[in-house]
Image (cartoon, rainbow, N blue to C red):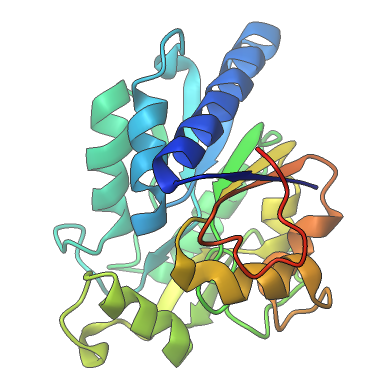
Length: 248
């Protein structure tokens, strides 16, 4: 695992996007295509903006999966991750092969179907973040580090749901769904390369716990330390509590 820290979120996001673009180009050049996992949330705005503007990516050769989606939330809702990816990634790039997690109708069936699709071939690069409670995807603490199921139906803890309110996706805690479809921890770790983008001061406590604390299901993103090709991208604020701040 590598940690890179930058002066601000914009500089950090551009650096992460350069690495992501390089990974996609390399996979397309060597294997004729690329399979990616995309993250969502406010922390990914600048990263995806920079990535979609990167030159030389043959996006029709890219197949996209995403980390998670709420159960019983319409794709038209502003907080829908399918809507987020459609607007911020798919429509900007022309990706034609993507696997949406539809939690509106039969979430269990969706988890099984997309799970079969993701198992067909390895994932080249996964984009992830770190939640304020340390979650990885919607694997809130205590996360399941052992299941081999690619996708799970999970119950969201209060800290996770409050984060969604504070980011402006929902008006109140009561409006936030209680359950979601989430990619499992082990499925994320099967990716050849992981790029973790985690800016902002509100992530600093979780970043310290996951990168310097005990490797534990109570700090789900700590599992990234076991992956052979993970880079954590931080800004000065999210890295503020680390005992030793890495350079970028």
